[in-house]
Every structure is written in structure tokens, then in C-alpha cells.
Amino acid sequence: MRRRRRRRAARIRRGIRVGMFACLVLIEASVGSAIMGARGARQEADTEQQQIAAAPVMLQMPEKEDGSGRAGQALRTGRKTLVQTLSGWQQDSQGWWYACDETTNYINGWATIDGKNYHFDREGYRDTGWTAIGGEGCYFDEEGIYDPDADSSMLIALTFDDGPSKYTGRLLDLLENTGAKATFFMLGRQVEKYGAETISRMNELGCVIGSHSYDHTNLKEAGADTARQQFEQTDALIAQYNNGEGAQVIRFPYGEYTKELAADTGRACIFWDVDSMDWDSQDAQAIKEKVSSSIDGGDIILMHDIYESTVAACEELIPQLQAQGYQMVTIEELAAANGYELKPGVTYFGFTDFEKERGTVTDEGREAPQ
Ligand SMILES: [Zn+2]
Image 1: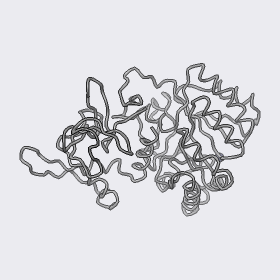
Image 2: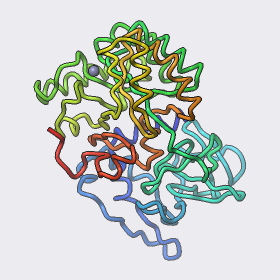
Image 3: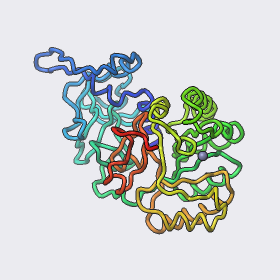
Image 4: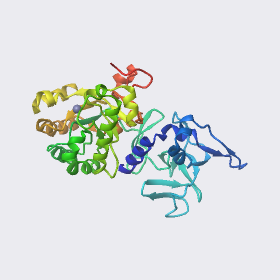
């Protein structure tokens, strides 16, 4: 799960989501002549992207963007070496992959193996957990086996802004004890104080690491240079405790953003559906009531792990919501379960049916709200 998340995070950062498809090189096995795939202008412009995207040589076409078709069969790259038998399941540091024969492996699509259905990602590793495929959320168990009956309607995402703080450890204890996951949008100035004791633990618990600027400046007012500087500074601070990686997702302070600023971050930017108003009440009972009376499946909940009252509220709220059937997942999992793979530079407002019906899940193809 964690490995998959890392791979995906790395892929999002590199922005190869679109480029990968644009440069698959097809070899017509019977003739042996290479047919060049269409190359996107974006890919031409980005050398790092070219290096990565040059990898798969396909003997059989993978699934299409709409999720139809089967897994492709790719000539193995040097990275993947057979460890067990000549063909079959193989594992390396990045996950499980499947050798079809001595020279090829499954990549990017569905494959039925021993009567079970699996899905392979664009690098040829089997997917686990919620995965967006052709605009649908599909669930795969820990062994990568597809579960057609998995239900995403009771998934919610808890998000905590403005931390970490001296209360974050207590919140992480709660997450660990309840199996709930969360997404943390942290301030660089707080990471300086509390990052060492919290960030690696967030990672271990499967939480998603986000950035909320260095010092909560209104970045729309401050402008692009300040925004860039604030996110860079915060990334560097987070990276100290996050295996050298910066934040995976972004939330702008006060939700004040422009599409240009969001694009500049190179990461998905996340809004919320339910505001717990915890900063206003700072009262555990009030926070609990506010959230439990407003919540619905698919919601993104906004809270702040800088108040003791918020953590105290969560200590009652999380078990209570779980008893009602809600499952607390990260923002990335909530997106995937609803058929969305988080894209860099795109702003997401929520994954509820309401957002889907209104067509306002993201700001793609429309102006940022004023
Ligand atoms: Zn904030």
C-alpha cells in the first residue's frame, strides 16, 4: 500500500500521467517493425519525462484511457529481474509484478491469473486498495485481487490543517488504535517545531502528507513568487522527515487560490465539504455535533490538529462514525474510490454525489471560483 502510494506520488510529481500514453512504442511482433506512438508536445518538452516514458516496449497494447481492454504485455526493462521461476509472480522493492514469460510482463490493465482478476499499473506493478480505472473506483485487496462488491459510499476523508502541533501525537495514537487514516496539510513553521516527532509516523500509518504553506499567508494576495517560496521552504522542511520527499498534496490557506498558483505547485490542490468550525468553537462537544450532523459519504472534513478540543472531539467522533459504517481514508484513496486519479495542478472540491452531479469535482475546464 505504502509502496504503491509512493510510486504514484512520484509519478504525479513527474507529471507523466499523460505523457506515458503519448510515447508507448509498439512493436509489431510478427513483422518486427517498430511503429512509433503519437508523441505529445508536452512530452517533447520535458526530458525527464522522456527518460521515464521511454521504458515500456509493448508487445501487446494495454488498456485504453477509458479503462477498457486488457493488460499489455511489455518487454521487461533491466530493473525487473526474475527472482523465482521463469514466469509467474515476482516481487521487488516496488511491489508485485507478473512475468508472462522469460522476456515480458503485464503492464497497465486487467489480467486474469489463476481465475482471479488483477490490475497492473503503468509500471507493471499490481494495484492494491482503491484504484481509479477509466473513471471508476475499483478495489483490490492486499494481494491485489479485485473485489467487485467493495462499496465506496461510506468513505470519508478527515483532513487536518495548520499543524503539526503538540496535540498531533495524541491524534496519531487515535488513528493507530482505530485504523482510521487522515490527510495532514501542514505549515512549514509548525514542521520546524513538531515535524520530527510526527511526520514519519504519519507515513507509517498510511496518512497522506500535504502542505499548507510556510506561515499561513494568503497566497492569492501575496502572489506567485511568495507562493513558490513558501511551498518550496515547506517541502524542504517536510522532506527531512519524509524520506527526502516534499508534500504530496496542497491546500491553500483560507482556500484562496488561482488556477495559475495551483498549476505552479505541481500537485493536486484540495478543498473540503464539511467545515468542523473547530477553530471557532474550540469545544469538543460542538465540534462533534457539527461534524456528525453534517457528514455524508464522500465528504472531505476540515479540522485543525492545533486544538486540544479537536483531538478530544475526534476521540469520540471517529469510533462513533466507524460504528455507523463510515471508513476514514486519505484524500488520495477517496479520490481513487470515486474514479479520480489526483492530477498535478488540478484543484479538487469534493467527491460527493452532489459535486459529481453538478460537475464541480474539479476546476478543470472552468474558471477558479472567485
Ligand atoms: Zn489553515
